[in-house]
Image (cartoon, rainbow, N blue to C red; front, side, top):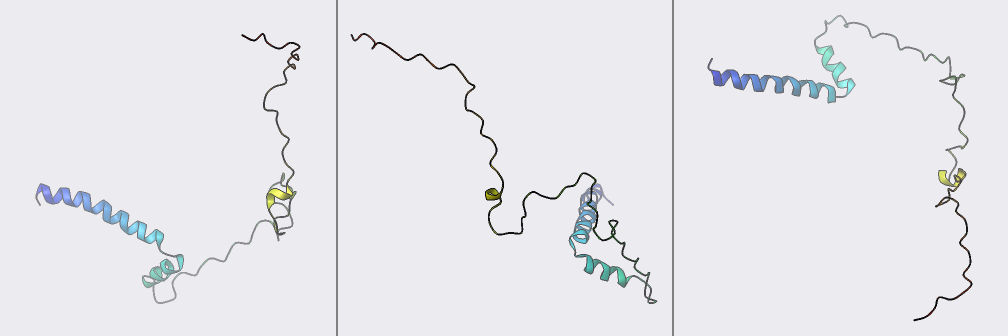
Length: 109
């Protein structure tokens, strides 16, 4: 094999492997399971493991100890912004003393 062939192989082989992996990962899970089934023995292959039950025991407990229910129900119609109270407004400038009222008109030129 010449150096050009080795260089082309070094470029093509990683791209081919990466493309095959990307195609495998983008394929739906059902299709991947079907393809895996082609390579299993005809005795039915390995059995699937039983699905794992959720830890919460039926959802009676909140997922975190500090979890609390929402203050606003999101299932009702309307905008969320209309249900939440507006945040307090912040003054544009810090409080400064009022300017004294002018008592005289400036002298005209």
